Picture 1 (cartoon, rainbow, N blue to C red):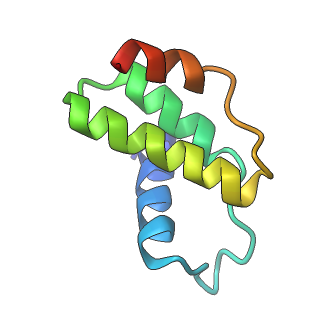
Picture 2 (cartoon, rainbow, N blue to C red):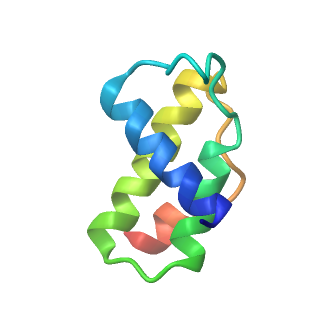
Length: 80
């Protein structure tokens, strides 16, 4: 499975459950970047793109101390 898709699935799981699994005690800081890349590289509808970008922002807020991925703002502006 592609690393970007794994990052997307991990972010959905962790944000939904709001817990870290026992084998992943520290969240992967690159999840937000993977989500932004998935929006760019994958054919998804607008709702899924918006969800992925929202999760990237929430992930960054919680796990990266508000350090947002470089391309996040551009992707959000293009989506709007």
